[in-house]
Image (cartoon, rainbow, N blue to C red; front, side, top):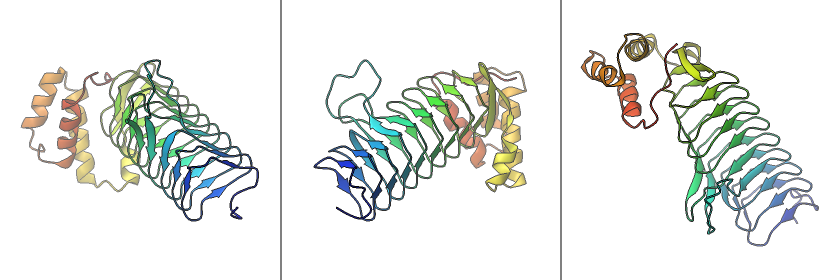
Length: 261
């Protein structure tokens, strides 16, 4: 046994471990798990089911990654979970596999899930998510890149969270949160654009101005959804990346946007 694998760890036959994988005391790796090079499982960490973990991830004690869906519609088969590189799963985090055979819950790269946070079946998570402690994504939630979720926040099934959105602590999300927006409250409403987060991620004043203009059209001009989208299409900034992203996100929305303040 490798010096990187504690003698009390349980590695089921069939599990595939990449180069330099380290596994601590009493950790468990199931027989269908594939774990990428340089990933670390701390003591009592668990990777189960048909789960693929990328490189240089870190799974802390008592986290459960790839466990069976909570969905009562589960009929068997081999659904699973696919996780990218450099993801961090802190203590007691749970991430479930998908519900239907041959389908997958998916996560990208560089995501951080803090203690007791939960990602349910069939979610699709992008890159650079920061998910605070005791927050939860229900089934089929879609999360774009660079989303920040505050402590104790719950996101309803089938909601979508746009890129660079920030969700305030203890918020209740029951509709889609547009890109670049701060959402807060129970139920959450759109408070403003995520100016500080955008600046930290290198958005120029010109890009910030485009986001401000789009936010005003959607939330401050008194338009209904159809009118707001038409104003976005007609606006002089309609060719900007930010306007295009707002429009593309809105056109795929089935639950509608959260309300304005």
